[in-house]
Length: 280
Length: 280
Image 1 (cartoon, each protein chain N blue to C red):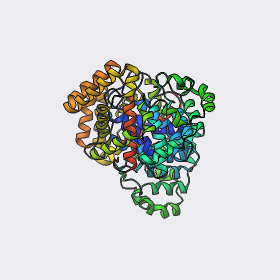
Image 2: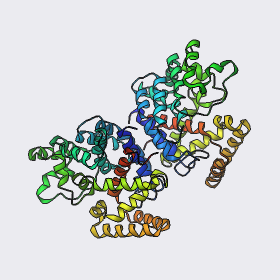
Image 3: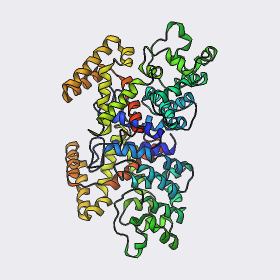
Image 4: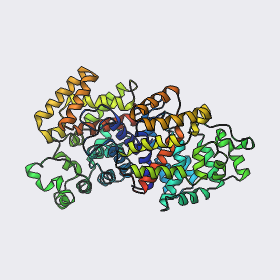
């Protein structure tokens, strides 16, 4: 499989992995957002992922992937995962799917990439927090309306994401060498073969969730809830399958969705597939 | 979504639909053939499906789709479904996804299409029966070795499939205006909205299975078993969810796989998606 195909397989394995507490998986839908939306979102993202593989600028490929992903009725399914996968696909196509390789890709992003990143918000309803006080003009919720401000400031896509890397762990991957992505890939490699790939993905999702508070949960429900979810993920890992199931039921009942951790899982699966450490 | 993407969504919805007695679905793997192999097979088939959409000859697009589908470790996942989907994608790209439109596509197939159909058997281990006595040179199990005989006889792909349409309901679709495919699409349209699309697909799978004996079951286990499976599918439809579950468990336990009926379900889902009667 080529890099764009591995990215699609990673998205499918991520959503197939169950139980993945608080997220959609093959056993659990959320209200108005179900397993089938993720299947269709994966197919829709294909042209953008192939554009990334073929050398299109990162921002253009990302906007195209998000636009395609959004051609289903569930809304935002994989915006964060695609923001990780697009530079990883580019790095893999360059033959260097490593922390250094993907850092080279994100450091080469331009103002035009930033503009296309803002345009991507026109296609999907993404949950985001208020921007930093000195960066209100770059509020992503403005979508393409913010493009003139982006161009005026000469902000590259990496600059834009650096504004949010304290609050958003997808942005933190961009500015931090994709550290958690590669940690997840290493864990997937260690566990590969012990269960089907999607089940190993679900296990590593839970490990990621137990290590750091999920930033989407923090934005939607506050830092205390995010830390409580982290602790409960740790307890679930120690408690075994029944505790994991109960944890999964309770997060869905409370409307708590650790979506950033699912994005990191998809990115880790992509790296492990690319390196041949996980196979299907 | 474009026709090639709708074909991939149809394949994913088909395998996601559960319970689908005797076939892989999101709840059930077969020995050595699991849900993840179908996910990866769908991604792998992408380039061949896009070739069909873009006007490549049917045989070439089919061989490419099968070659890509086979880049996973489960073996043959969707050979029969792709043999239905490739001409349907071509018809949809021509703006006429109807019995007449797809019949025009299959009637236009050539000797070169037939040669590429035989070459596709080199990529996948497909279960097939002995050929008719007067057609041993065209035994598909010979794969590309049969190509000189195909060329010598001047057999088009439609001619080749017509040799097997008594024994194989995918071939019978080619020679019979895709009758069961369009029947399935009409039923999907009637049931759309009553449940998620994959669940409606599982229901129509069972209805197809109750109407005609599955030809893969007949080839592998004999006509009596195939007819018994048909009768039990009818009883399961009348008996409700618990009877369907018990039927599903029993087919997996007995190694009975109504794969042709799953192929027809995928093709029906494609038509219903294309006509906008089913959506995700």
